[in-house]
Amino acid sequence: GFTNAAGYLEAILVSTSQLKHLVGMDFPDSDVLPTYYHLVTHLSEVNVTSFIMGSLGVVMLWGVKKLNTKYCKSVPIPEQLLLVVVATGVTVAFGFHESPFNISLVGDVPQGLPSFKLPSVSYELVRSLMKGTAVVSLLSYIISISMVKIFAMKYEYSVNSNQELVALGAANLIGSLFGAYPSSGSLSRTALVAAVGGETQVHGLVTAGVILVVLWFATSTFYYLPKCVLASIVFMAIKNLVDLEEAKELWRVSKPDFAVWLASFLSTVVYGTETGMVYGVGFSIAVTVLRNSRPNVAVLGKLPGSHLYRNIANYPEAREVPGVTILRIDAEINFTNKDFIEECLRSAIEPGTDSDAASEYGSNGDEEEGGNNGSINGYGDSGSGGRRRVHTLLLDAAAVSNCD
Image (tube, rainbow, N blue to C red; front, side, top):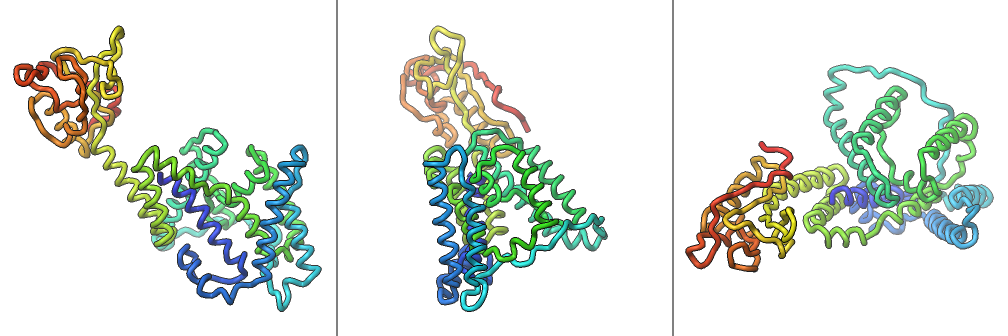
């Protein structure tokens, strides 16, 4: 739930960060609600030319993409490159960067690569950066792994979280020697790579090579590129990642996971990225602890004609061994669930015990000996009301990975 929410949130945060370039105005706050509130209350400050050019860029990208899908499948037209060339040429030809249009341009791009330099480390510097570093590191990993899992589900490949963490750490460690910003996975750039058909890591080598050539020889060619056009490219790249069907499926499959998704989403929208992520992580941990505190404890019965024992609540044909109750604990045993598990065990061996834990197994079925009641609380002395007599309790601990 939290991972899915983080993907949605990053898409919204990225689109919100690009909004200032699309409408050609600055926002005093980068959070979601303050940004849109400022936009609504200052509509007169919107740069109409910038908004129209950016909107036309979205339409052009959509149109060329449809054209590629229908007529140019073998040799598709690079819609992003075409838009950049056309927009730059139109801006220079009609002077859209000058008064009265005044659209924002990319401007000067520093030429060359940063030089190697060992950072100066001191106790005071480490102490002053410790809190901010912890927040940045956590957010970087959360955003990266969330984005990786979103694309892994979309394109059906597996993910190694440890490998992703090592790669992220190595990239930041090497980058720090060249004065680079802390890095993480970029949703907008990854979505753009997916949009242009990149499927393997080879695209990274090609991209790095092109960037090196541009930084050394061609930075001046981007001077007249409108920022609103770049914003339109980002908007088109991330639009396919916002799919409410996933949220509906999460609601259908797991209500607790949907609650984590909703809490993470709303807290980030209302309180901002850092605070929202903290609330989301905290709520996710709380739900995990709550789930672990009330694990599934199943009553097992033997399937007729076999040596297999299954949960009698899921397999009505399974029959319990006369006089024996077999319980399967489907979780590790620790301080959060020991009381609940103890109540379940007492309900299995003490006739007439009434507890919250026992009520978890309530279901109707046969009341005769060896029947399929499915409720721990439903069994007692066979001499009172025809209930089965239990003289032996067996625990199936195959699913117990750890015992505190």
